[in-house]
Length: 398
Image (cartoon, rainbow, N blue to C red; front, side, top):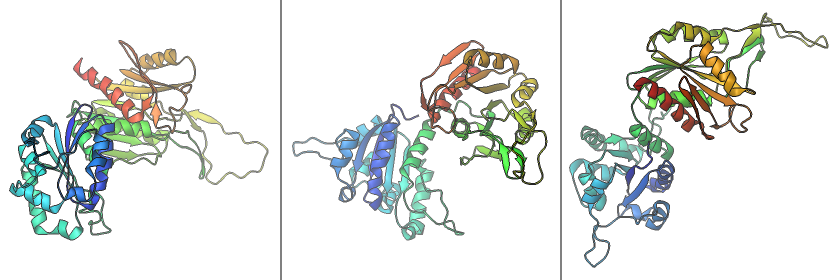
């Protein structure tokens, strides 16, 4: 949650300095206020005019701004900021920070900083691997600083990307995650996401257009807020990496049902976001069905109702959130589903809202609880996930 946060962005003399523009753009888009402090060497790689245009603030580089006695207070910056981010941070600056060598405005600001400090190193691999650099990084960590390093690997040696600055969007996400409320700390939450595929023969299936984007956004939001997450995912292309998130891959409704029934008893809550097939072929052909006649009749039978089963299993203290995708009588149908399946919340989608639901990056929902209904505007699914988890969190505190 970076909205309203005040961020001091330190920029040093690295070839990666141009990436600071993308960091600034990401921070401001997230609602933060950014003040740039740049080293003299940093100005050789990117101009203060460019940075000032992005932040709408004068860039600070020197102790004295004019010859009339006006000066920049590093102490005031340390009190003003909610966080300090140094990106890119060269080996030289790392060494100065680790050893308190306050010979420029950036280092003095760092030494005066009362807020958490985040550091994104940027240098060539040999400099990064040098024992002195590694010692400085460890020393800065011991001081409580947060070191943001790339997570990619280099073939079998695991060295690719080491030393280069982490990508701007990942740096912004790191800060966003740090400030995310940890209101789900200690909670165990299970989610289902994506479609299910019900086989007709070895090459054909009954499925739907679900991309899993909404379910994965919910899983990511729960993990950011401190929950231990079990995500049961149908066949999707989405991927997540979070130490608090475990993914179980399934294909059919039966596989999703068995996984959900197995893991639900250990959970504090479950969010059923998957677009599960309601029917499956009664018989699955062992070989590909050939086109021999003018018509083909496939007899279908109902699949397992995961929400209804978990609603029956639900114990005191557990919460169950369902989804309803409707095309008509939306609110009435969703309310009936809430009661029938013993849900605590139901998230209502309508296919009549164009540009939402399947495969879209945006969604427009209503959340129906036992005490009423809340309607939301169309917004990115990540923000929709935050709205849903906000409502879930309220139930724990009610």
